[in-house]
Length: 130
Image (tube, rainbow, N blue to C red; front, top):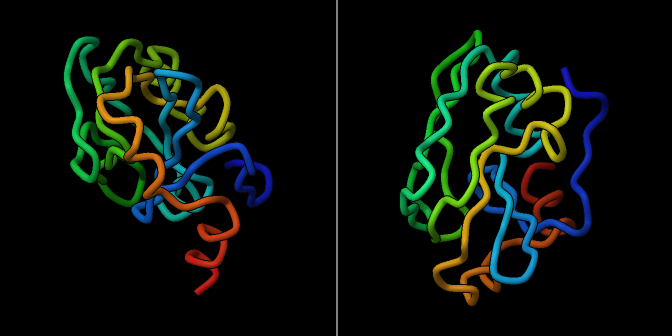
């Protein structure tokens, strides 16, 4: 399991426990510490196809844990330009390093303005503290 609870300040957060690291016209996406902790040990991640389009607030892939199969919700819309094949073959990376080696996809942003509607780290921490 991941070390300790953390929510990096440089990320933006979706209320469904997904994060986005926005860099110019692209963003890297993954699930938060809270999500991986709630799921338990992730045993399967099926990376979506490069070139697929994802829509904000819609599922774009699934992760399977020892507890359940869960949809992963897109925090932003765009076209997938890279997928984390390492997380596909080593799904435990999603638990051990959710913001680093456990990232899921990289997208070219369809609407950069959508990022303004995501939560900052402080607002997300408040959300999961309840």
